[in-house]
Amino acid sequence: MITVFLWQADPVPVRGGRGVCDDRRKARRDAAACLRSGQASSAMVEEATAELGLRTLTSGYYSTGRKWQARIGTQGRVRWVLAATSNSS
Image 1 (tube, rainbow, N blue to C red):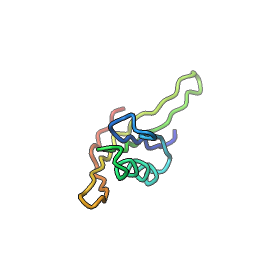
Image 2 (cartoon, one colour):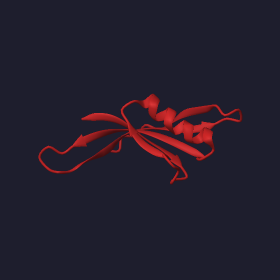
Image 3 (cartoon, rainbow, N blue to C red):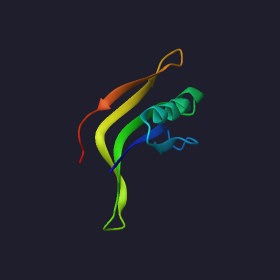
């Protein structure tokens, strides 16, 4: 099991407006760049686990329930707020 961070900048499709990363800070930087560029009006980072099927050919990302929502201030500073902590497994 590997922890990853799924990020998305809305509205999608924004060029490069979503991704998967193993570093929460990088996921936040990538999402914030879409906000600062004006291509997106909101952004979210979600912690998940990447589970690879060993006995079957299935794999996927499963939310841990931790999500952060980005807010951009009047001076262009992006602030991240913990949006959810429920476990959806």
